[in-house]
Amino acid sequence: MKLMIERNIVISNPETRDFLADSFYIESTEPLPIVFFVHGYKGYKDWGAWDLMALEFAKAGYFFVKFNFSHNGTTLERPSEFANLEAFGLNNFTKELSDYHAVISHFTERKEVNSERIAITGHSRGGGITVLQAFEDERVKVLVTMAGVCNFGYRFPTGDRLKEWEDKGVMYSENARTGQQMPHDFQLYQNYKENEERLNIQYAAQHLEKPFLIVHPAEDETVKEKEAFLLHEWCKASELKMIPDANHSFGSSEPWDEDFLPEHLEAAVAEIIEFLKKKL
Image (cartoon, rainbow, N blue to C red):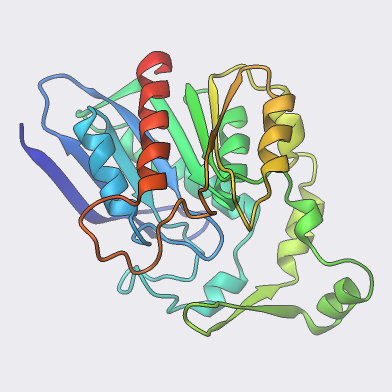
């Protein structure tokens, strides 16, 4: 069995901008089921132990794709750095949904892929986008969230802070790892309000009829376990797996210099693969 790794494949999306994806798979005479993975807020495809996670899916028989959203702040030349903060400030939810559609379209044209067996998974904010994408996209058969959010709206400021954001046109959030001040243009909030019905994760979850696995860290300091319980309550087709003692990144960090998965991420991946073998 020959492992195939293709890095930094350029995906074109005329609605947003070009972005990058990686694929991991074992050469096969038969088309493989495909699994897409999307990062969360202030994330990117090469963060932490995502490469090692990709290898596990490839070894389990999946064509695995991870990708950068077009406006996550990275560039084609520097895919693991927030080298374009202007783009980060211009990101919004509908751009991410557009990128999700584009990357699925790109890879399902490949001969190595069985386009009838598509699963999507996302971490953190990417989990919320994944629920919406699965609801909208008939091609998607199975979805998984990892520490996924259940609501975008209540993460916005309110009152005086919202008014200040509108008046200034931008607000900043510090990246604890890099020290960068990450901008959010007010258009992010406007995009949410203008598309509030489409971006309603609760509605999407309640109307999903696809197999849905919710994997959530029991000690998540960023997305509280209540959000996993709500997703599970809303979606009748869902299964919930809590990972004991795990934090928001399932024990991974950036950089991740080990050649093995952190214990909690390994447990999460095992749960996902077991679920996919039954449902995809």
